Image (cartoon, rainbow, N blue to C red; front, side, top):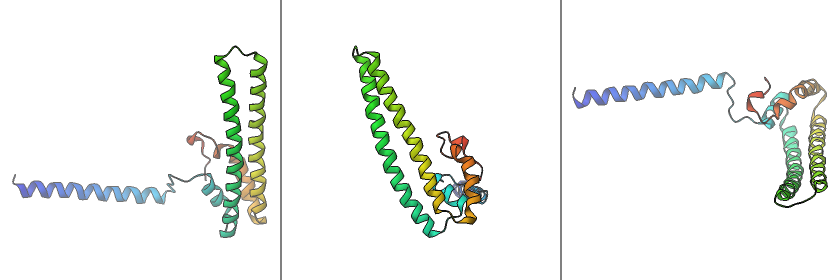
Length: 153
């Protein structure tokens, strides 16, 4: 084989592999392939939010994230105190107290989430409430840390 045949074969293989890659990308997009879609985008899509609702929802999200972040920081500080006690000869009562405080803050997280969804419901128009109620059936899976538990669309 001469040099030109080898180069021609190599170019042909590259061309075919690029065409297959392009076909793969387009076929997956048409099947609803959304790799980086997060809960925000899923909620917007499922509730059919308009531009104003999306803007209002984004404001809600920022407030919610701030409240959750503050709560998470408080939980982390208490956990640090709790686990530092392992290196000391502290009494079990102190550990129980810290664990109870962590539990209270974790409960507060759930209330923050609940009220966040109440606020989202207030953004919905009458015709969107049916979609909101259907979304609430999937909400635990939607926010699950296990990506395999995402609800169907």
